[in-house]
Structures are given as C-alpha cells and as structure tokens.
Length: 402
Image (spheres, rainbow, N blue to C red):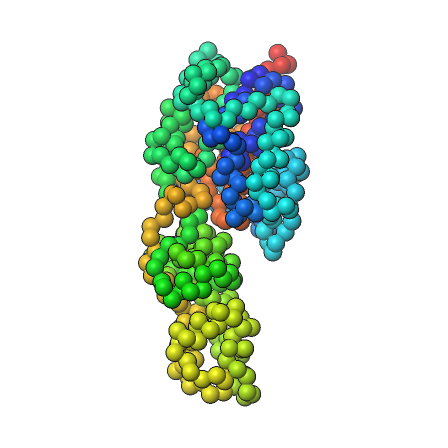
C-alpha cells in the first residue's frame, strides 16, 4: 500500500496522518472544511480535554457491547500517553482530567496543521469533499467536489458523527461513504448535550460553576461533576454526561456533593452557637447559590439556632432536590458527539479494518463507540488512529517483502 487516503480532518484523521509519518508512500488527508480540526478548536470550551486518569470501557458505550470491550483490551488503551508523546501533545491534570497544557485549542490545531504540512509524505486537501469511493482492481477511486479523481491503495474514514460544523445533514448524507461501501449504521442520537430549559429564577445564577449532582428520579440515574449554570439552562461535564444516560424528564439538581444526612447533622450541631445561616452554607456552595437557596426556601431567619425544623426541610429540598423543568430533547446542533455509528460487527476489532472491503479502515467517532465528557472521545480518536496506523504499516511492510 503506497497511497493512503484519510477522509476527515477531525482529531482521528489528524492523528492518523501524523502517526503514519514513517509510511513509505503518500498520505493524503481530505477535509471538506477550509481548515482542519474546526470542531476540535472549540472542545472543552477552547481548553481541550485530552484524557482522564479513570479510563476503561466503563466510560464508553456501544450497541455492540462485547465487541467494543474487545477493542478496550488493546495495549494502546493503557499506553495512550505514548501516543500523545508521538503526537507532541502536552497536557496537565486538573483533578482527574488531563487538559491541554496551553489551554488554547486553536493554537493546538495550528500546531498540528504545521506538523502535517512539514511531514514529507503528507498532503493536505482542505475544502475538498469526497463524494464517492469506488473500489476497483484492489484500489479505491475517489471522486471529489473538485473533480480531482485519484486512486489509492487504502482508505481510512474518520468523518466523525452527525453534527459537523457548517454541515448538518441527514444520517444518509453524513454516513454516505460508509453506507456506499456496504457498511451498516447503528441507531444514532445526539450525545453530550447541555440541558436547555426555562427557569427564570435559576437563570439569575448564570455563569456560576460548582460541583453538583444531577439525578433522574424515576430511573435512579445520577452524575456528579462540575456544573455550569447558563442563560439557557445547564452545561458542564456533569450535564453533558447526564444527557447521554437520563431517560425521565423528572430531573433534580443538588447544588452540593455533601450527603444530605451529613449536612443535616452538621446543621444541627451548629445550632448550639450563633452561626449565621449564609456563612454556614458558604462552606458547601458559592455565595450567590447560598443566597438563592435561602430565598427559594422563604427563610427569614439569619441564624441557624433560630430556624424551625420545617424551614430546614424546605432548605434541604431546595439544596439537594431542586426540580429542573423538562428539558428540550437533545439536538445535534447542541451536541458534542454522536451516539452510534459504524456497526462493529462489520469491523475487525484488532485492526479496525473493514470485514466487507479490504484495506478500508475506520477511526474515531464514526465508529459505534461513544465516550463520556472529559477527554474520552479525543483519547479514543488517538488510540484508534494508532491501531489503524499499526495495521497500515504492517500491511505495507508485508507487501514490500514480496
């Protein structure tokens, strides 16, 4: 295999290109947008989450549970930091999450672009959309919107999910090339979305970030992590992860992570002194949230010792079980990833090569493997890119030996 075509310059396409720098042949990276990594520039609010200390199949999901767990037995899962080193990605930890050291995703994408442009075997084709892939005579003929047809020995599809910046189309259009080549697409849904709802009172806290808990009261599903109150609802890591797993519209918000019974114990212990209520609450929540909870609970007392038991119950209801209005359905324009994708039964899990078309590979979000928020999907993009690069280099070496 001398000429390799990589379709899609999101993280998986970018990383595959760089990891094929030792390939003794041409590596062509095609991107329909005018620059690489358009969505990557905005990830993590522009800070870019890279990976997480807690990393296993438990933080991912797929319609093919047994098959995706096979992929997570690959040694590159544990050795992902070696891949980041090859890619030149520098990061630092913030709690359990690794974020880009520069915290500047736009600058990081520019660095990756320069790295590709300086790579002797790499050719970058921005603004060039692949419209058809036609296998013939052990090669692939690629048609483009620029009518610049070329033949390649292998193709790697890394076209991401349903939502692409500047191009929101139907599933048939977004997965057109894979479907054209005989692959099956599992049911698709937007994932990692903010919760959008109307709550004028909560909106007064817009801009505040805190560690809290969201809970689906009907199904007893909850997520604990950082939460951001916005003018349209809630966002942040806990919210994005929660969007991928809640099923009931009966959602509550806890503004703190302390256990409710522990809070009550500490509250009652503080009754013996002359401690102010607002000062006490500031141990657990931001000051504005403390004032909000006091107002919503209709509490007039300034001191803990003066508070009736019923007022404490009302405060706990606000603090630990604040009801969230039914949010709008998840939508692709607001989502970060797509749940679903290329059916794993069509893929060799050891190499990510198609079982249907030889020398056709897949990497990244286009596969039916979806991770939680916090660097999981970018990590998988790098890991799957390395698996594909290994397979391509091994096959190329084998061909040269004949």
